[in-house]
Length: 405
Ligand code: CTP
Image (cartoon, rainbow, N blue to C red; front, side):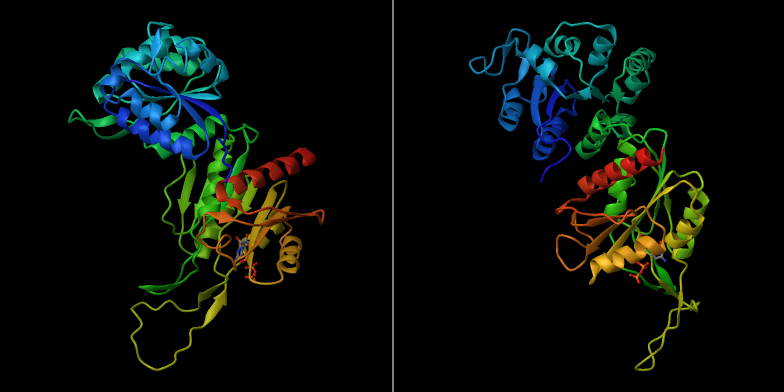
């Protein structure tokens, strides 16, 4: 499957900190995503992880000395200049106080700091050190200089540190560093745009321990929220109950019922330029909510349900200049149902899929949708990961925005 960093040339700079072991995992994750990764290490990093580990996993010689690298037969040491020219992005993880000081002051006295001076690609710097060191005035000053120079700084996580102290200083998990790399590389075509996304199921309580719901995992909506944030948007995510972590830099509002979702959505609709409703909203709720757990009794009981408000239809009625996008999960008559919803809810785009296959339905990591547009055209997309689908959907939304400008 193609990813956003497929074939991208990434240089991973590793410094001498205890978190260097996590760089090995990061390298593997980047490789899995299709990136071509070369490693440049400081001399101190070699005390924590051997260059051979990185060489074996990356498939490239590792550069750790200005005049020599891990396999001088395969590659000459001056190659780090070529690597700097070729790189699409650089990740420094872990970045020690020492290397941060060197980068901030233009010092080039080893392979990594020399490589950095020859570089024009974006740099993701992931500081990791003892929290007192991280709070040190000189380190803070150096970091703000690097920020001003255009470095992307990934804040360390707070927690227990290798030295026994507790506080900020831990290297974020590889998946979180990857998320920031995707942010760093994404086009910022949604900059200054406010995007409202809904995700997940809603739950309609029957009694204190039971509810009506559906198996929506929320993955599609979360992918859209993440992708919009990567592209520079200010994102509000209104989500029903899910097991997913909050996307970075996104305002997350957690709700349970369709009523709560409606309230949160209407509160934020005015300011949004783009509204994407990926939530699987319960169409009905029990008329009465039993105060106590309903006890087992008769062989058959009747549950009276009342229709919930159609949030998207109401958004369509109220909309001013928003681009409105809906989702439709169907079990039959995909085209007829999707076109009906597109018209009735006054949508710009509806992404419709059949929920009868393993690759396209609730809880899966992939989806196969057809996009139906307001101008009655449609576009059948192949099966793809939900992150990729999120970006394609945003590409199409950006086109709608360009036309309406
Ligand atoms: N939707 C909504 N509020 C509801 C029901 C649906 O906002 N009460 C939104 C969903 O978030 C989705 C779109 O409407 O973006 C279509 O949802 P779907 O469940 O497929 O369709 P319904 O309109 O509920 O129609 P039906 O259940 O009859 O297919």
